Image (cartoon, rainbow, N blue to C red; front, top):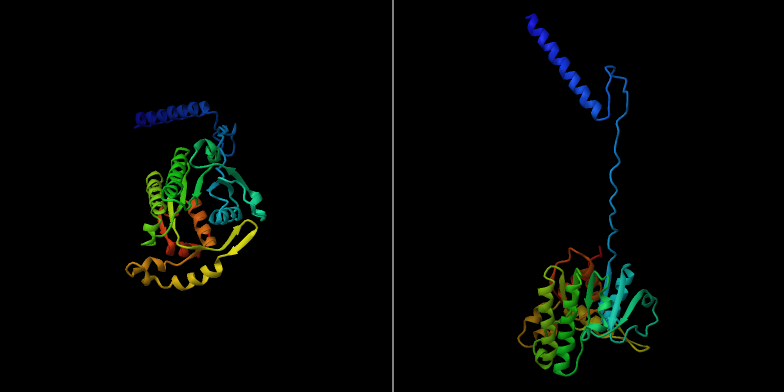
Length: 287
């Protein structure tokens, strides 16, 4: 019994010595006095890591000096975004204060050398580019120009791309075949290149105040009453042949509000938004 007790005491003594040596190697010595610490803990300072600041949202509006584009630029400036515009004529002859807060680029989407610089630092793009004319011209300006922009934005690593397309008006599509075929080609390219960050808005007639030189045309005088009536007449759109003509108008302000949100809100669902979706999203509060 005495021999067993002796071995236990020796074992505990050896264990205590081993613990003391290990503790001394870690830079801390313990005393049998619980209120006494011979040397405080040595805490090594963590290595500082240089984390880059978060990217600032920069929005590029293609066709930003036009009717819809100017409303989009104003909406984006009002939201505090860094905004740039690219168009063939550059800065518009508008004297509103928001114009001074937009970076104006001049160039053509049909000539990459004239506008690629405008994509530097851009995180999202909204294209309002479109036009009327001959069938071949309409396809080029509505289709080819936007396809060029979508491809370049994708190569530059732009996160989101919003395209202002057009609602289907049935028989009218055949009269403006180049216009609608160009729009459809651009839509297909966008859904391919920006499967998770591409949004297509399909408004019908867009109303609001349109600047023509120094003259302001109040298109809302006609469009606003029609919008109020037709947005509640959705069943009429199901009528054969003439149904699409009952597509309700939407204001340029509403299109701008939804376009900017779609371009900057990472949780905005990708895909196609029809005129009723535009009206619904425009009535929601911006996040």
